[in-house]
Image 1 (cartoon, rainbow, N blue to C red):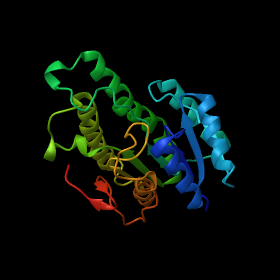
Image 2: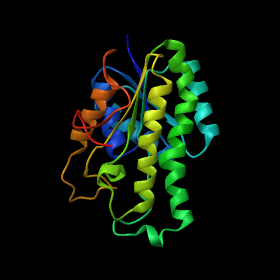
Image 3: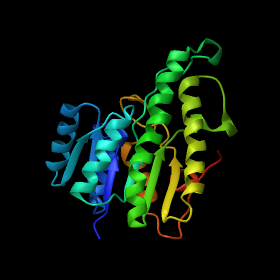
Image 4: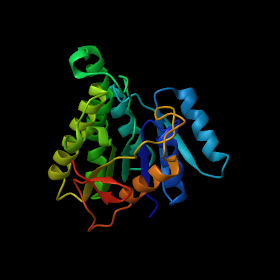
Length: 233
């Protein structure tokens, strides 16, 4: 059966790489982005490589957008099998400190990196439950690990730590539903966010995401992974 996958924030970077990889794995992919023009360009770029993809506008900060996406998926496909919560922002510089963090900067990070993930997941999980199957992959970061918490980018760190906690909660709540929920760290990737000097490629990040998106029924849930390996929270 052809799986239906949604990738948020997929007009560039890791999201676009993940969308392309999932198509290669035989999935029908719906890529989403806030900017319809950029999303359509991304869709056309993948189609130029012979890949059939769909685009749907989505601002994860707006719950009504997530609800409309769910309604569209139900009409078009009657289900969704895979959700990759990739959309995210880094609103504060790496060297910034928590003692100087403004409430507004923290709010920006949480609205996209945490609340946005929750809203989209809440909107799409009913379709997964109806089908008795689902794989949810939350793109997190090692900067959110309590095991190695330190100085720098406090808003981003807090949002990703909270995302990791949400991952565990969702995995527990959905344990008997056929839906698996995991988080992963892509590492420092060469994207607009990571910069040109990052040590990892988009393809390396997309491989780990694809693995989690295709876990077998006896695969893990509620874990935090990097390169297909469990890492500390």
